[in-house]
Structure formats: C-alpha cells, structure tokens
Amino acid sequence: MANQEQLNILAQGVEAWNQWQWKQPSLTQIDLRGADFSGANLSRAYLPEADLSGAILREAYPQRADFNGAKLEGADLTDADLTDANFTKANLRRADLSLANLSGANLTKADLSGAILIGTDFTGGTATLTGERAQRILRGRPRGRLGTLGSGNGRLRGRPRRLGSTQGGGATWYLNNSETLQI
Image (tube, rainbow, N blue to C red; front, top):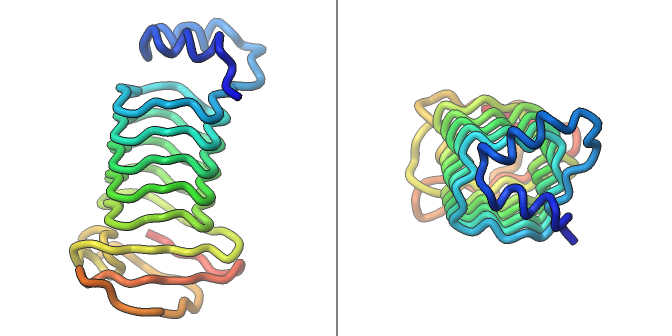
C-alpha cells in the first residue's frame, strides 16, 4: 500500500514533489506501490529508488522523469510517454510497456524480465537489458533489426532463439540469464 503522505504531495504536482524530495535528505523509502497515476503528468518527476510496484501509469506522461533504481515490477505503463526518462538499474520485471514511447530513454542495466513490450518504441534509447529468463516481445513496424529498436541501431549479443514472426515484422525473442539484448 502506498504512503498516503507521499501520494498527497505528488498530487500537488511535480514541482511540489521535487521540492519536497530535495528537502528530505534522509528520506530512504518512496512508497507508491499500487498507486493509480493513469493519465497523470509526471514530467521531470524525481523518483529514484521509488517503489512503484504494481502502480498504474496507463497513458501517463513521465517524460524526462528519473526512475533510477526504481521498482516498477508489475507496473502498468501501457501507452505511457516515457520519452527521455531515466530507468538506469530499474526493476521493470513483468511490467506492461505495451505501446509505450521509450524514445531516448536510458534503460542501462534495467531488468525487463517478463516485461510486455508489444509495440514499444525504443528509438534513440540507450540500453543494456539483462535478466533471468528475460522475455522480449518486440512487435510493431519493422524499424532497426529487432522490431521497434530504431534506425538500425539494434544489436543482439548472446544466442537468442527466434520463436516466430509477428504481423508487423517484429519477432518474439527469449533470452537466457547469461544473454543480453543491447539496443
């Protein structure tokens, strides 16, 4: 259950949230588990190491938000605009990123094990994605080498097994623990 005081401050707007955050140097836990931020404007929100497990961010606008080290396990980010957001070392296990815009996002060392990435746009992003038995579903218009990875910038390391084509020319890829999908 999310911390109600923190939810109330964030409801006042991102500027109020960020100012409150910077005045709390000893704050060790941002607890926003299961919160509903559907359609919310979280642009430039400072949420490093926040626990947003199971949170609903459908059609939200957290462009340029800082989710460095955040826990977004099982979060619903369907159709969210995550342009230029920072997900370095974020836990996105089993998150639904269907139709999300991650163009320019930093996903370095993010864990996307079991994440749903149908129609997700990774154009111009920076990432080294790893995870135990990571499942990558990359469907959509054929751009780059793997679904929607950008203008030919997609590179695949390890030995993935292609399991089948999708209507839009993308593919479903399964990776083992030791394999890495690098964008």
